[in-house]
Length: 185
Image 1: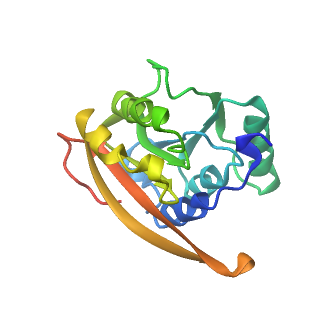
Image 2 (image 1 turned 45 degrees about the vertical axis):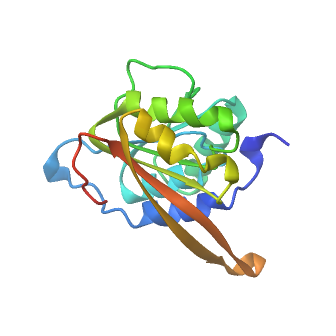
């Protein structure tokens, strides 16, 4: 099975987090742009669209991008921008207000490239949220992000999932540039 086609439980935690964001205010100028890194099935992108944000759903698989676009259409949401993005690369045209991702810290070799991607593409004053299900491979991420000039707050969370009869536990890494003030949500 391709990774993108699996429903990762950590995306439920991240979707809940995004659902708590205040809708963007039209009086404050252009809507903030949210990039979902490794969107897979696109649940988090759909929640951000529903909250009123401009969304770029990104993945490295064309099928995932087609799926999230169709999913938005079927749910009566505006289409997200879909884009191939490899977190190991730099994209000079990507300056983002918010970056979100679930279950991308599954291999130790991903930690540094993801921290560098956030550092290089997050606007000053922007924030990123990375969620995992307490994978041991993600344990060093906070320190790696600090070395990249990022400030990280990590908190544990748990979400009941009645459909499977148990809770999903994980952690949220909330990230900003180290020289940017903490702004909450």
